[in-house]
Figure 1 (cartoon, one colour):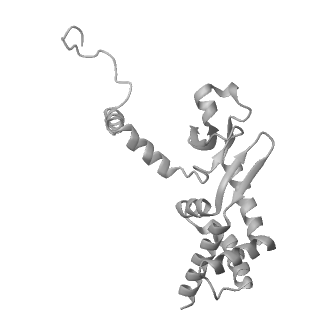
Figure 2: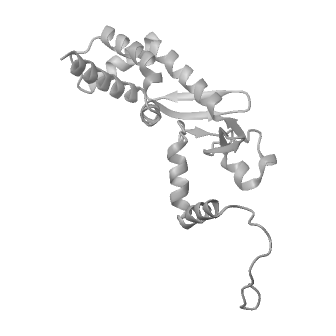
Figure 3: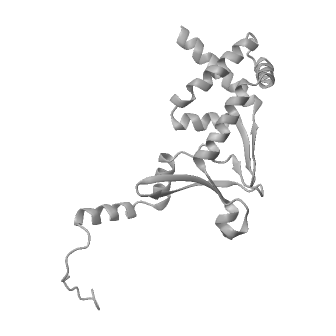
Length: 196
């Protein structure tokens, strides 16, 4: 269109009408809805729990290359001030999530944590529970983890992990003992329901 007058195009269309329509349908949807749909499809196990070297939160992010999704957590400092302003700008999501899961699974088997979890569970009303039962429930949970849906895994990590601090050469994971006690209570109820 030029000065209010439409002129027919003289070249072949670059994209077909169907692709054009699909693109406009996507753009017609509000950006916050598109973002929410993308975030729902791409799990971020440590969202809200992971912090960079400066104790500022890290945000889940991703990129697509050749049809493959690469997930990572990026420091807010890098986003706001530039990637050259901080020692740790981003970490691969799979690596840091795997390290946190390994840490949590090792803790689930640690005798001192089992004893603390048992004491907390008894204090929170699980009177008849034994230390052996807590040990077995936590060990069984470690084997079931991979069969859980991502949303359930994220819920459990939110229950178990208080905070993850990423440093240039270290990763510190703080676990919630009361979260372990809640998990034990859930596992115990599920085991009783399955046995009935």
